[in-house]
Image 1 (cartoon, rainbow, N blue to C red):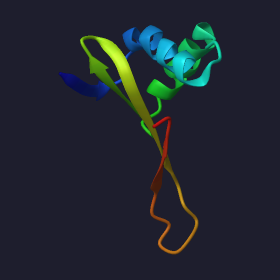
Image 2: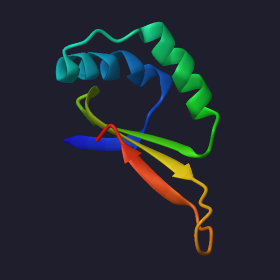
Image 3: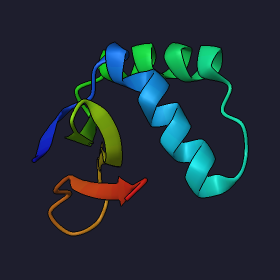
Image 4: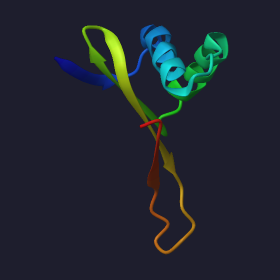
Length: 81
């Protein structure tokens, strides 16, 4: 059964393996952990993972951006889908 939840530090090893499989490039796990710490402390970042039996099988990152147009309502950019 697939479960979706907010990413935590413990998900990063499995997430790195997924990204390496999809991109064909090695992930710098230390830099990944560093960046995750910064992103996790910023409420404008939303990182979700999909897990199947504790293995990350998908992810999505949303970044809430401020706007300068019309009513200046924030919007979200979706990445890593």
